[in-house]
Picture (cartoon, rainbow, N blue to C red):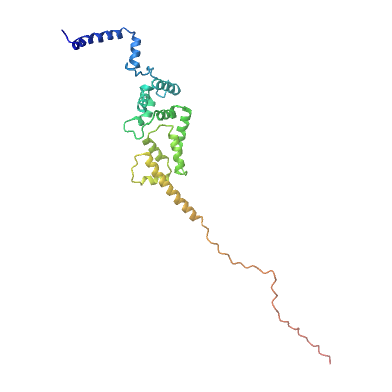
Length: 262
């Protein structure tokens, strides 16, 4: 006679098969919904909606249409992407072509300034594809930008504003910056022994040199504008009273007597 423990072991496979048959008899759609919705322990996940198409930056879909679909996808399936890294990775997986290349510099392993949030990634792409007319204008203004005689601070402010819409990586921006600064800064940079490896360090160096150059130029200008002390010129000013006439001696005219006739 078998023990109770042996009886329980003997009945377990049958019960398991009965439960499996019950599950298999459910409609296929119901089984798929159960698989997508959770693990059967009460922790249900949202039903996965279709992925948006790949966005390349050219043709279809348009930027406006694609961002709407991406937003709907992440809102509906937020529980599948609970962290910023997962959301960034998902959106990056829906990029291709030029759009993928524009974001690669900030997504690659070891990137000096990676995306810290999905908002940052989408704002970067919006600056490139959000307004094509604006982007073409920014590209023209960026290409024509030169420092000339402007202070470096105001020039660099315009440089960063325009470059933010173009999505260039730091190495490209460093090369462009060196081409756009004026001749005096280029001369100072050519004799500098430091090899700059970041845009921020290069900018700090150029700002410091420009401040010194402008201070020296202003000092020389002040020295040139100092006026010499005027020495009053001695000039003869005639008196209003006429000078007396020079004294002359009076000479009595000679008299001649006429002789009497004899």
